[in-house]
Image 1 (spheres, rainbow, N blue to C red):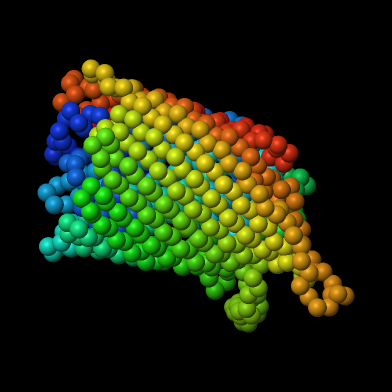
Image 2: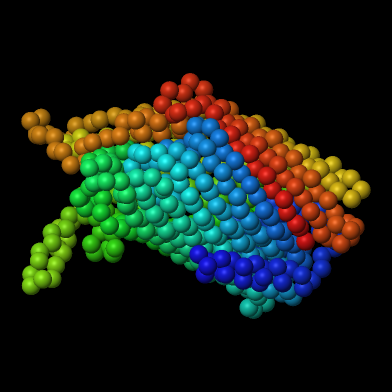
Length: 532
């Protein structure tokens, strides 16, 4: 922990120092909000770090402390219905001559009550997992470091490098106890050619996930605590952990993504267009190494995002489209181990696919910012999100089990800014809702011999969690948000420095709930920060 804290503090100094090397126009800068600045940069969410060359302001940074409180049982199966978290974060854009840099640091500490059903920090990342069914407190610390730099190398050609590193530690405070350490690393290298009309770029992506999960039981041996291994649609092994290979020792989960991304941009007067297509391959496993892995996770990921911005005398119009398709496959390894002369020799006998899942998401959002793009007097946005997920599990011979989920959500949001003499007030409102549908579980017999016996093994199923997750995705729900932010300009607005306080409350109400523990979830967030 000390090494990580030292890294964060050192990075904070490196992040803030360059931002103070050059001074932006203070009167405009004092009114900046990072989300408004990023919106004006169509390449800000691209994998291509060389897109930082389009940053058209000198510098802006902020440092913030935040506190959050979540309450309510309409949450995912692994989330807390009563949690408290606090954290620190800072973010900065800086231009030094022709080199543009971006940096971000973040620390978060979470205390969640009544958390169970998984030992992972991010269980959605895997098609299989380990867990138990004893609710207890969990503590989690996460550290995030992001950095990117763009520099010209020849005339209209630029190079960009970026790194996004997230590390975490989590512990469950009651038997069956778990201790988890994880990291998530994304690194990209990019090239970008750009002139006044056209921009074309490409990026190579490398991403690695790793989680190290250890189980322990402190209570006496006669008080055996149950745990389980599960794969898709909540089939698995739900026996006692004591004296079993699943319940002892430490488990390792690894996932590696490699991919390419292509980008293109076009500038036609006041109209700017940008599109990005990305492909990733996925290769992961459960075990110390791939040769001796218990299960193998493979897949393909296709992404496309398109952005458009059009400036008019009254404001700027934005249109964002984002799609993602992921195909996953989870297979169990068949390995025969033979011990010869005290040395164990594994022999790979092939693998059997247990679970497959295809997920498609699309989101479309329109936003209009009235007034200055960097500091709009009012914004209005409307969006639509669609999710389609098809899953199949073949773990109980001779049956195949399938599930399908569809969900549609709509939302509208408005923000109004009131400029005062030495301060400003922003008020935000949001309202949305959605509904899903599908098929919770269908069983199909696939053999041609009706007398074939059904095998055991992974034949057990957590039907309660199966229905709970299905209901979470398909239940009709109404979402709302109200927020306010007060910003005070230090000394005078021309100094370009400000203090701000932010409060936001999100609420979600679901209708017709029977499987999820509660029909409500709320989240309160408080933040104070310094912009410069």
